[in-house]
Image 1 (tube, rainbow, N blue to C red):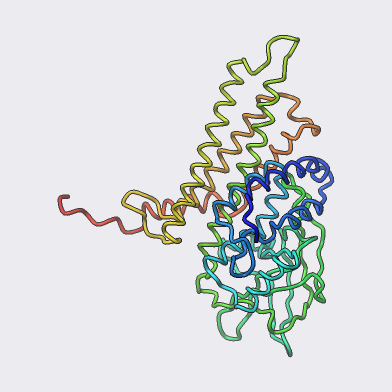
Image 2: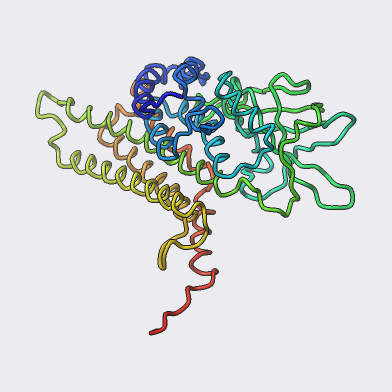
Length: 399
């Protein structure tokens, strides 16, 4: 792959995406043209390992790309992240058999095919909560029969690989948790267009239905006992959580830029521009503080993860583990960015409510990440567990 300045290339694409975002948001339509632009520019291979033909971009580059794309269109950025974070996490902790890993990488690099994990169910909520999926796979002659319904299938109209989480019931014993690779043209598969959301309206996160879907035996990608930890665990969460955080910063930055331009130009009653009003200046300063804090948190978590390689041990006495720093960065960034966009709305005033102004869309989009894992309550429990339940560090000799 050519050695590109990926964030700069993402910035150029984001300018195009911004021109299309209002229409797709209004219609709730999927931005096929944005993804064609991403494919043509080589972004589908961004985080695919170099030894598999990809660009092998670092997590730091991935995060910078996410922020730039989200400044143009949050929906496109969030949807694209679901593809990119998969390959980034796999580079750290390969959990798929070589046959499937090669196929997924080849598809992304050579054919421009997208993949996403399809795990969430209405009754299950986020799989991170530890529940058992209702999607069931039964072994039949020549393969598997899979039945179930998944929600939040982001990029459903364009996905080639649907990596489905399901359970395999074992007679007289506990079930196994498995992942299967499904294609959109498999018999018994259909997409139900259910996505009509407050924010991130263009992600096309529709329902994915499997009705006695029969697939060959080799579609089984992973299998583990229900009481065994998910081997994808920590790296998957780090790439996902930090990717959501960076995307949210990009949306908030777009709102900040709109508010700053508005304040520089708005001259009520032919008087001075509102940028000289103390209240406006205070709010803009506060917005920049919140965004700077968020970027610092993301960089800190990324550095900690890189240094520790995902270790749960404390980097040094008195500091959080890398995983806890990831969780802290995600939840604080989301809250910071929501506050930043709220402040931008106050700078702009009543016209910020009008659909013709993009800041109304930013106000809705910036909230979407609250519902991506780790959600705030679980993240805070992680931090509390480290403080209250884990063994304290040993006393020093002079204590």
